[in-house]
Length: 329
Image (tube, rainbow, N blue to C red; front, side, top):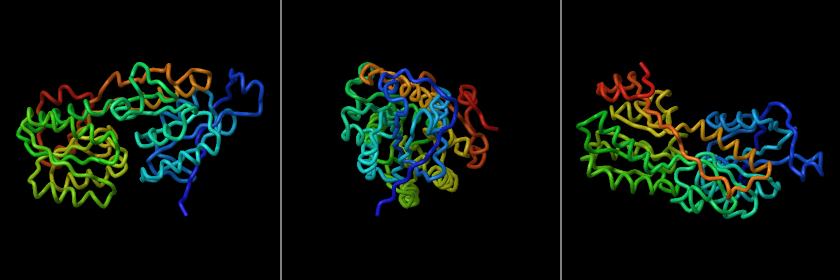
């Protein structure tokens, strides 16, 4: 039997609800379903979503008092999202929040009426989630990291960090619709940088070691990961394998560098998560998703870990260090 897990997660201060429906039914509180790829348990949830839930709490949404929240995890398998959406809809949610493109697609297929807010999708226009950034249309809106463009910039930064680099292993979860868009952008940009990319599809943790072994056979001299959740979930093993092979690597999430990786070029994802909580608030107070434009990052951050550089015998060019927003000594 497929396991479903729901997590109670918020605390805070009370709020007065202006919704007409709630005023007529004082005992009714809105219900939010949060759909995520990241594993969760009955008593915990992935810490990277804290800015979203903290934002809700600061707005006065208290689980069990002023809002009811179901945390539904696909536990690392995108195939579970349609069933999670069905489970969510059986609970009659007032709003759905999603953290990945497959979750957004499943939610959009499941309902055209319940508002859907995504926290930080890779490219909602390119993957067909919304009609445009300015006018999303339908019942879906939220935040985007615009992954394809940023992924190309990561390859440029990796080349700048290691000017002699020429063969780059790219780890990507190609089942996620945002991944092929990033790979296509890399394919287009790589020749002008004098780089050949070798793409390996990562569906689970068991694919990682064979991917690095294949990279070694191709004599790769660098590593880049695209921005899908499965690669974040398995970030520790990816970092360990990259270090073992002394591969200079650049990642999409800052936490991958503070955890010990070499470099990251990251949108301010915590800010996007927090802004997504503002959209939840606006919609629960009557705003239409179709009228809330997709928000993009206003700042990108370059983080370099000199400890990780020393571990693989790499000297980062001073010009790149000078441009870094954060350097870990």
